[in-house]
Figure (cartoon, rainbow, N blue to C red):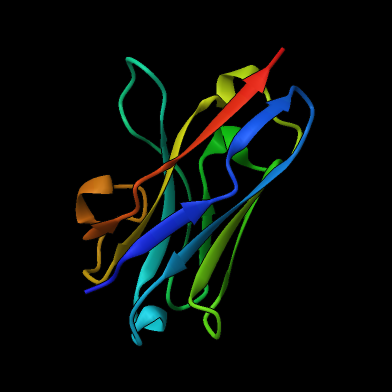
Length: 123
């Protein structure tokens, strides 16, 4: 079992940056595909980025060039660096861990979720 705790959210002006962290418990962190998702009020949960256990990296189209996902297996942590933030990036951001194989962007394949961290981008 994996427990995930996100941090680093907050309020930032448009054009600014934030770095989210997701700390995972457990000794098998490197065995999981890690993903970031977000959910804005009244909207469905949306894929943001993923970094697989094999090192493959994927981004949603609207995040390419602005967001960077990284992971440090020694620290059991995955990061999401977010630059050039826009008001439409405002959402609760969740990290998730998947042991099963499948689509990196399908939130239903992720087995473990953090509690989420709020990101608010003002215009």
